[in-house]
Length: 449
Image (cartoon, rainbow, N blue to C red):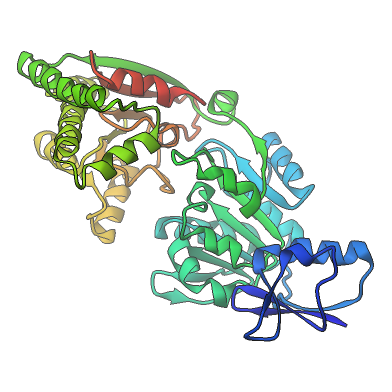
């Protein structure tokens, strides 16, 4: 009789050659004198064996039996119920909902309904904390944690992407369901192995924007499943998210900034024309970066591009505009986003605003967020730290002083101020340098709202 066995991120087939219906999943491994497949294929292998009516023994998943109480205080909104129903049809797929729309609730409802051992994978320790609170609150159980020094597997276990990647060979046979929060991280060359070396037949991805600049999101249907449900910010604003306005404010460069910007962009464009290069996407720019390693002209052109971009992102007039916005919203809670940490520090020093960067110690970060929640701090300036997986309480004004063309970054920044509250209307200011590429970048990142 055929027998399926777990083996450190793979499945061994013993007892004979794979029948034609599953032959494509396996390769012969002479080291163990049997056939081997990636663990991700487990569901499809079992489905094909069942469909063919073949007898087999299954020793792949070693998940503990799980029983949860009926979820407490868990009421699904209409779109959350639709998302859950769409996912349950195949028990695979990606749910796309805006930041603040309650993606976690959809996953918790699925865990409760399936009564299955579950691994939740998250990008940050702060998200681990948020998930732990949600599991305790709604399911009444204490989850295990894998990350930040913890290594404890329970019926529901929460792991960071880094910890799951490093330990997937030990974790991959312990769960029936795997939930990837912020699933857009998954297709990267390293993290994708979490999905490939895990046998869990049921998979859910959660994100506000599945698309990646490098195009690797095309692998999500294989790793997790296709997008099964999607709602946009504007569809939910007013009822489930705060009403909002987006205001673009133009900053004019000084004469010196204009002259330097034109000189630098002219040098960059001249190089492209000379070499017959066209910048149609990230791949073309990556080729230029590769050229710059050995080509001094390419290196100088790339340096000119970076300097010109920095002038556009951080024109001096932007800080004058920020001062006006802060004065106008002195009674509101304001989040300020900028691209570079040195500018974060400058704003913090000039306006006496607490700053949070990747270097901010965890204890200090928690203290700043607590003071913001209590109203003792009215504004915070940050680079990218508060964009993903951080619950920012009561913020209703966001100021984007600089950023990329990424729609995900923009949606996440907007999402920081969309938590619903009676009578709340959020506002996001985009401060854009006039006459630069930043204007086009601003238009690009607004798509998909």
